Amino acid sequence: MSGTGARDLFTTMLRIRRFEERCVELYSAGAIRGFLHLCVGEEAVAAGVLAALSAEDAVVSTYREHGHALARGVPMESLLAEMFGRVTGCSRGRGGSMHLFDASRRFYGGNAIVAGGIPVAVGLALADRLRARPRVTACLFGDGAVAEGEFHESLNLAALWHLPVVFCCENNRYAMGTALARSHAETDLALRAGSYGVRSWAVDGMDAVAVREATALAVDTARAGGGPCFLELRTYRFRAHSMYDADRYRDRAEVEAWRLRDPVELLAADLTADGLLDDAGRKELEEAVGREIDEAERAAEAAPVEPVEDLTRFVTTTMDPEVAR
Ligand SMILES: Cc1ncc(C[n+]2csc(CCOP(=O)(O)OP(=O)(O)O)c2C)c(N)n1
Ligand SMILES: [Mg+2]
Image 1 (tube, rainbow, N blue to C red):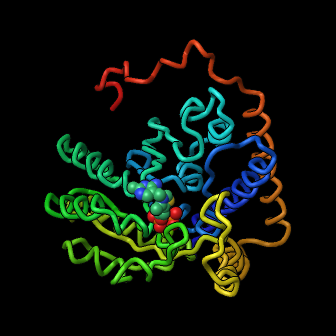
Image 2 (cartoon, rainbow, N blue to C red; image 1 turned 180 degrees about the vertical axis):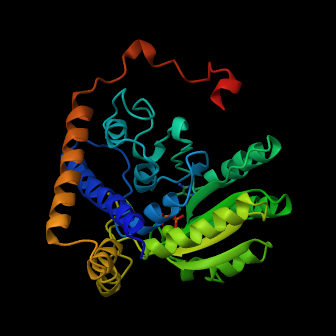
């Protein structure tokens, strides 16, 4: 295992895990309201996929996107401020947890509509192709999106036009309370994507290094003009679908079995075995992450809400489209 790369992956995953845990507390305290979908258990996907992209590449995500945004480098403070409804939030406090957005980092949401980001990703890739920019768009979405027409239309078009999109399906085996096998006749999602002529791989989504390596191969292929790729990243969410979900549709034993493959602890064990992490190092990292979250929370709490007179601004864009690119 290469030292710095794997340690960076671990740091990213730990930041995501602890951030999500703090979000639970803040939600319970009433500081975060509305919908809240956490990615606890799925950190290896966020860390691995995002580590394989360059800053010029684009990212399109879903409503379960805190981890993707953090791994992309969107500051914690602007994420928490967004969830607190403050003007310093990455979407000026207007979007909340499901609509994290940061065009300066080419992070194009945050989308509440299942599969809604997939055609957006294909459009971004088409724009790059037309302008001959050597960029790739990574599109993250859940297994539930594979049931949507938009998924199939988008895959077909991307394959037909050889667009540089890496479709990253975060298969956590459930779409809300519905298990994959209860709604899909064919549950091998990589096989289905392959039927569009898209190169597809199934990947252990609990192994951050494997995710990063598979994504890097897909990104290289797409960037070199080899057309789109599809990654089925097999993972599991440890918590309920959202804070409103009573989580009564799966056996405790199933959840516990997956928890044994906790992606954060799996990577920690590998790093320790390779002499790259010890107890003192872990403690130091935990403390640094804790401080980062505390500071982000303090700053977000101190930030103002948007003044009422500004509420009609930014409803339609006033930006020059050339500048907005
Ligand atoms: C078009 C559309 N249909 C239904 C919903 C309601 N809905 C919200 S989340 C969800 C499940 C999606 O599951 P999946 O894509 O597997 O993502 P996960 O929540 O597992 O990350 C559904 C059906 C929606 N938001 N958008
Ligand atoms: Mg799912």
